Every structure is written in C-alpha cells, then in structure tokens.
Image 1: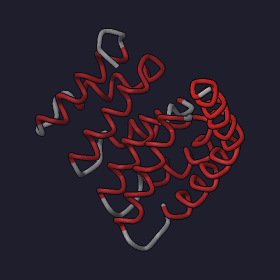
Image 2: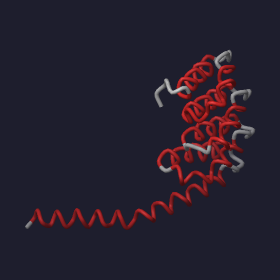
Image 3: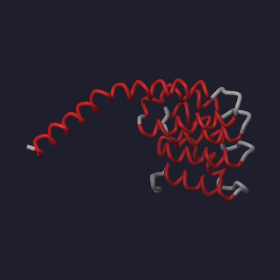
Image 4: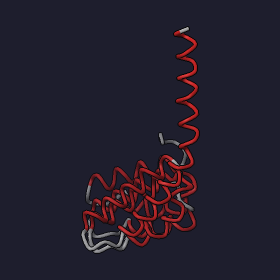
Length: 166
C-alpha cells in the first residue's frame, strides 16, 4: 500500500510542476521586461546586474530574451565600462540575431576599456561561424597590447572558424 501511495504522490507532484510551468514562463517574461527597464537605471551596478541576468536567462531560453537584444546592443554604448562589458558578455550568451549583434560587437573591439574589448571578442566567439564578418577586426584585436584581449580574439577566431570549443 505504501509503494502505491508513493506513486500517486509522485504523479501529483509532477502534475503540479506541469501546471506551474506556464506561470514560470510568464514570470520570466516579466523578469525580462523589468531587466530591460533596469538597463536604463541611474545606478551602474543595477545596469550591470540587469545585463548579466538577461544573459543568464538567454542561456536557458533564447526566445525569452529576443526582445532584449536591442537594449543590450544600446548598452554597448553606456558611459560605464562595466555595463558595456556585461552587455557584450550577455550578447554572446543569448544567441542573438547576428545581423543585429555582430556589427556593434565588432565596433566594441575598439572600446577604450580593455575588459569591454575582451568581452566583445568572447561574445563573437560564442556566436561562432555566423560571426565570420568580424574576423578582420578580430585579427586586429589579436595585436592588442592587452594580453587577455589578444587571447580572447585568438580564441574567437578559432571558434568562428570551427576549430575551437564552444
């Protein structure tokens, strides 16, 4: 009798999760909308956190963050280098439309802050073969005086050419 009860309990718990799944998706959509607004907050830490969280959500469910891609691209021009870096990192994680994301990430390879340049190279590498138009700029970035930037550019080229790990 006890084992039969465990089966019913397990089924009941499973049904509860199935019933709550649409609610969780709705919550994530609300989270994305809130985070997009937070990308324009006065406080740089809030903007950084918003960009990072969008990247995390996009890694799990790309379709949820598609509306946030233009806002992340705009954040590449933020006055704070930490926000620009977080935006670049997140763009690499959310699997963005390459026509929208690759040109601004390529431009970010020339950012005055080396962590932003490094993040842009990394994001282009995560995009992979679809970012092949960035290879000339990445080759220039390989000559960057900041060693982490030149390494990130090298790794990105390897990934885009299909010779690196994703």
